[in-house]
Image (cartoon, rainbow, N blue to C red; front, side, top):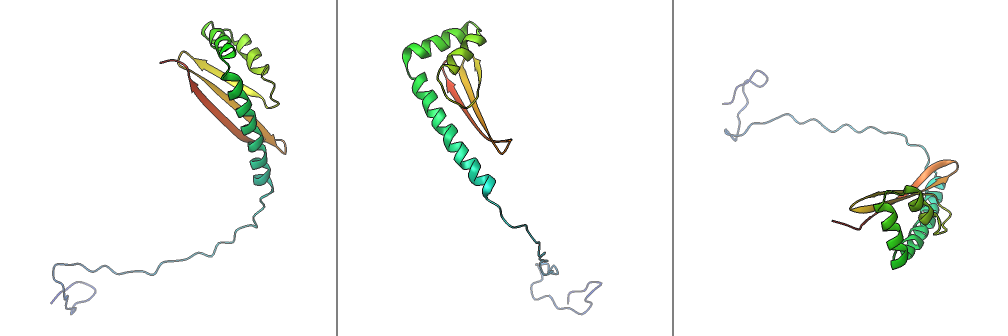
Length: 128
């Protein structure tokens, strides 16, 4: 016989196993607002645009002469020249440029309905 304070005459068929009372799961029936995908779809459309801008940037950076000018300006710490070169690419989205001795980080941001919706960051290694 198995004795405890709750079931004093309970016969445990498995003497080496303990039984724990199970409680049924509680389900809460939460009400969610209707889904409005307008902003999400606008963000996707905007992100597609900045993805195209990123492709234009990469095509320009792949030109050896441009890449050499950019790397030289960054190596000399000439942020003004780096920004001038990046702006000369001619995309409409604003670009934030950061560079280190090992690489270049480019961030393109865009807005939807007056608030920032989309960010695309690329890191391109140019040193070890």
